[in-house]
Image 1 (cartoon, rainbow, N blue to C red):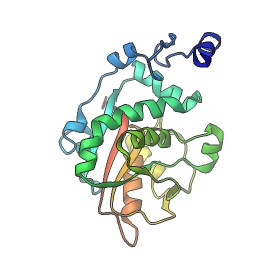
Image 2: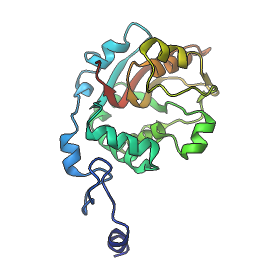
Image 3: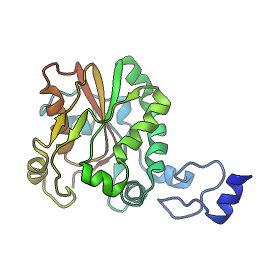
Image 4: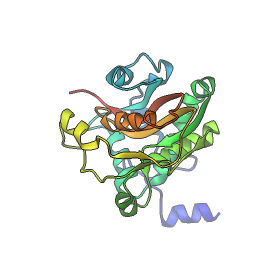
Length: 228
């Protein structure tokens, strides 16, 4: 009854289309979920566009992204709500969905921990949460794999990657991460949206630079921007 009353007074709205969510829907409405184009990368984590975009630059056990990220898509609006409009529940909801697709592969790969790409402390204070960590929480609910925060940290604050070219993106995130606590075993690195892969590659290099590097690192993101 309380939930119904709150929905009447403060109706939940889908971030993709701004229509009211109906009972039984999660943080994104069914119609938007149907229009957001899935990549299917989880079915071939070593044979897809994201893997080839990153493979050969760093050791990579596999790569996946749930949706294509297009400039005019509803998925872009959903991601903007997650990152800039104080809606962490969007990341958790989509993380749970993603987990249903990744669970089998992660179990077979004996993934030990989910590691979200960290935010700089100042940006974390501004936003109030790390969007990648919210996605990781949703993945944990579905897969049962532990989320490890605070072991991989961002020590330098970088400028936004949004309008940078490929080489500028790599320069912007070079050597900005640090391992504060050892991370071993098979790891899953989580990000929100991948464009060039520069941020993830910098994280992977940092993880493998430990005295005792992880056994393997695979990456997963909610979205992947298409090459223009």
